[in-house]
Image (tube, rainbow, N blue to C red):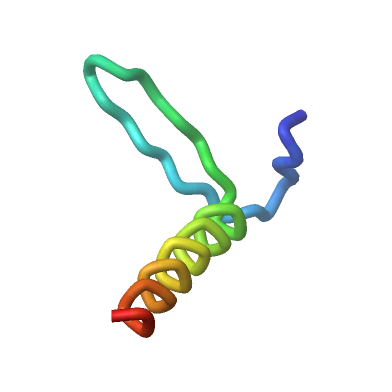
Length: 46
């Protein structure tokens, strides 16, 4: 379920008001790389 299998590294994010999110480490790394690449593209345009 959710693509999580034994041996995966997980990241747990929790907020009292917003609840809990469980992410696979691979998904978090992909998200971080996407954000950093977008930020790099914006600074190259400046």
